[in-house]
Length: 221
Image (cartoon, rainbow, N blue to C red; front, side, top):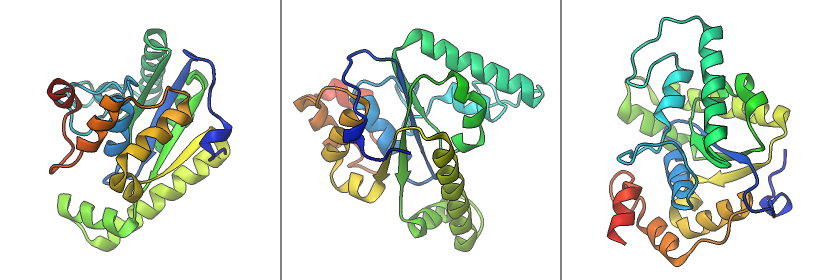
């Protein structure tokens, strides 16, 4: 697994590739996915999204339709539909991506249709993740910590097996210096350095409670 973005930068403009943002829930993946969107990567999220998730992919992977209703299909049928959805994204964009903290549950299934996958693996202090989970859901901080530990372990094993180019992202460092995050992502996936407008946008991104909507930022700059 490559973790040095300088060693794997793509020099050919327009090369087909897929960006996958993964990590634990409550672990900062929204910040990283939002930064990718600011760089112009189609991440499949609605304009009013604050978590920057491709609802269609995320819901389908969980056996739900776009509105979140359970689909009465067997797992094989869900996997087939998910594969077709990824292929449709491939036909629409040379470069696209999505963010899903639960992607470890299905990446194996769709790996064969992912074009040049590049992974942003977001890491956050597990005690902070556990506390955030405790604020959002019932349970104990011990349970939240254990869940984060298990998910990190599953992702690490998956990425070691897949050997996809992977950039390890520290949420804490990214939150302190979002401009550096923007530059690292751009360099990692072979994009031009961020413009001043993009740098201004990422500085504003996440400065208020919750993540600011990117389309609102574009209209205000």
